[in-house]
Length: 167
Image (tube, rainbow, N blue to C red; front, side):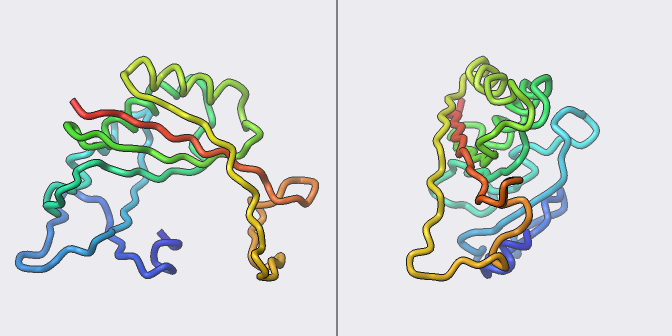
């Protein structure tokens, strides 16, 4: 959410009480976030909780951005189901996940691939190119500790693209 605010995107919490202001024009893009545990049924956010239909956009496909969420192979079934349930029920959408090239826990990605395929989704993994400075000086102050490997080099990242068609 901090990145969204820094980049002047509208931000809003996800809550069941949220409504689009009557007569107002909703912002084109609104970044929303919430803490959710896909292995628990206590707090289980789904597409309807996002209240995106109230925005009345023609394109109903959903785009979810996530990072660093692959930790335990045994939770990949529930994660795949959570991702599918956050997308538009009839139009589907995409989930873009960034993850370190070196898996934290061996087997997470293969478990996610199988879980997504089992419930009708598609998944592609793409290596992310290393950023180039394009004439701009990249100094240590532009990086955070998590961007750098133990050897001091910029950490390599994988982009995982998950797609579910709607019903």
